[in-house]
Picture 1 (tube, rainbow, N blue to C red):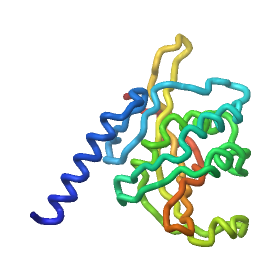
Picture 2 (picture 1 turned 90 degrees about the vertical axis):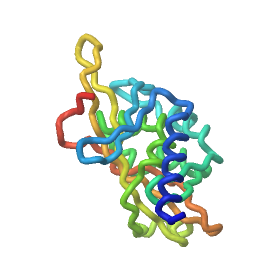
Picture 3 (picture 1 turned 180 degrees about the vertical axis):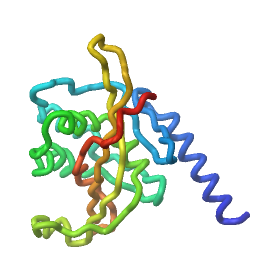
Length: 195
């Protein structure tokens, strides 16, 4: 059997596994250009004024020890103990305001799906040389996209605001890849998707 047939079968099995996932409030769709978007259909952290990041961090701790696969590269990404703290208290998070901050808080519901659709892997520098020990074996960045529901004044769904984020992954001494953070969360400039 040719190699490409095995890869297609593997892709089909992984796709079916994602369709049978536990969280039915999350969907993976493709936009008109064929790029994947994770749709988050429920707003968990709704505060308009201030997100309780300690609550977000507690939610993320449930992921520690899990492992998820990126469909594009077949890489396994592990969730270590440093991820919840970095996600909730990094300089990147502190700079976020308004809708971008709310989007980052709500993306925690879809960590496995965001990893699954990650694309465009590039090796990354240790900017500002602040992660010497953690960056010793390398850093990688991937692109990922997600949508958050947009409601009108009557509370009816109007569509989705689409956001992009960079998934930051560190390579550990054991050769495993560990999710470190999602950075540069920002709303796409196009109009909201009406799905």
